[in-house]
Length: 369
Image (cartoon, rainbow, N blue to C red):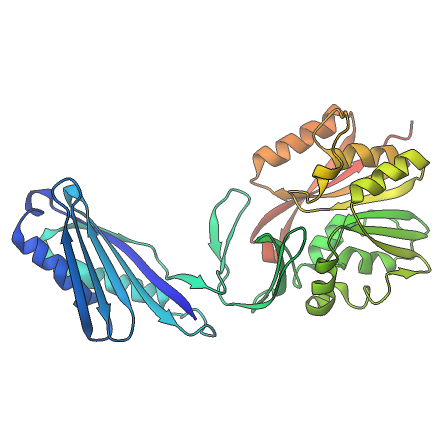
């Protein structure tokens, strides 16, 4: 089951808010807002400094909370229970507008203005709201929870979206949708980079998309290091359009998947002198597990970048996911770190369908000298 809420407010004329007629009007709001017969109305007067509250319950289980604050601001929150499998209604906004108009007419000349959130807020097993890189909320529309797992490292969810196919979320951050091949292709720079007979290290990549696409390009060897085996397990079952059959074997003629902390692998590679032609950073923006390893004296805060530069062959490339184009503090800091290391880079901005905002991807060169 899930709950859907309509939220709106009305500003009453202050000169009339203390009249008995206004208080009686508040008690009548539940009958105007609830679809079923009203079976109970509770009202409380908290005095001039706190205002009034009215709560009404209908026979079908829906309820409304009406709160009048000093100086005449009235908030109205209407909540009803719906079946979990129900999808967003095409008329959600129309329902809200109709309710707002009905209450404006009900309060008549007492109403100075009204405002409403144009949509019905959903809460329950599926909460279809995500944040952009600017911490602005957006609604995904119809979502169905396909699987959820609390791993040692993070919360893993995979939803099914009518628009984007199955979508992977880690700690409620959008990672990748089945619609997002453009993300993988841009990160790899397929039209710019030649992976044939090259050595590649993937940091993260638990959805399998990078490894699958790379193996089609005949690299000499690809080492993928993913800390959370539960991500691989979930994606191998529910993100087949991304990983295909790449997780059927953790080791093959030209690839190996290691379950572990990629920072330990970076450290071991530095100590052993192992080199790669490409390092691909597909880690989450907030790296899990790095508290185990970041005890190093570094020039910048970009641990994976600095470590990777130490294990890249001359002329090698570091390919990295970034963040939303509007995450200025993140992108500015990362680009400042790149410049501090005196490295050349290019930034690519790509429209990844499921992200719902332009996204930055980076390509950084290790000097030939």
